[in-house]
Image (cartoon, rainbow, N blue to C red; front, side, top):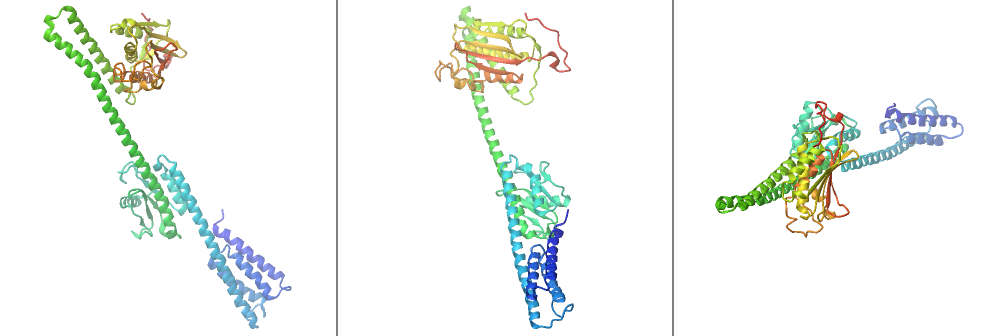
Length: 518
């Protein structure tokens, strides 16, 4: 790989060599003035590649050599004729003037090329930061851009938060600064001003420290090693600072956006908590009021009541207590299943046993006799948390009894569907309008039925927690809960639980013996 100085010198030497060869070949055919034009041409061409001092020196040496070889008397520096002396002086001045003009134009072209390169670098860097979701992750890219611009060693230190400090463990550093340079980076971040070589602050330092400035805040700093020795340090500094400021602005915008998002999430979480407390308080108040009223009546007037009245009040207390227990279970399970890395108590369970246990509990409720159950014979064992699956079916049956006509049946089916077991609960109620068929699975959403008007008593039952818990239970089992609208009306909720072979169970869990459904 040739150095730039050699690459530039070869064409200049070639131009001079061709010019001298041409003058030697045309000496007998041209006079001194025309030969001198070849010298002027060579001087102008060589100025395209040589530095100014080399071009001027080469022109002066060329005039002396021209006098030695071509001006009479030859092979001496003596000049006999005044006109020849004037020719040599004019030749030297013209060479210098033309060389100076060519060198000036070359410098202007190089300056324009450098400015265009810096503009392209800034534009490319801006595009990179504009598309970045986390600008701090591009600290290495900023380091590469600064290294490309300075051809030297660079290090970058970036804070990861608006209130961060340079000493924080989360501070991101690209490069390998030594201890003193790390101290300089920290000082530059705290002061928010450039320091080091050529900055007016700590000019005795050989390195330059440039802050990554946002809007009224500094979020990092860049170190350019040995910047004091750079030949174009003063001209290059604004470009380097512009690159750093682009990074600082992008970091500031990203952190502000993150803060806004966190504030919105916090406000939404607070609103959800408030709505949750209000809904739960309302749902607890209704059964508690019924229990308190029935218990107070029994305490105050129990002796004057007949056995039938006391039995009805006691039944009300039991029913509302069960309702409170279901509401409490749903609330606790929703909070548990919403937590990260939730652990289920799974085991091999019989679908027939789960359905039978759920059916026995459901038929103890008012209108529970409407429930009809059917289990496909020969179903394989299920790997599931039996308590959670039972709670899912309890909630679905409770909703079906609550929102369907008192004289219509409610069906509970368990059957195989491909690689899944489908546990479904269906009713013949008014159904749910299409716009609400996904929203009913959200917390505090009860949905609009196809028949009950908005705001009716039927709509106001419950806090809208039950179906949210059901879907959370289904997804915790890698299954899914879907609402289906049968052609004949009503609702059907399908819980699809993936089947798995016994070999897929935990390696440390021994497979229990198969159980026969009753």
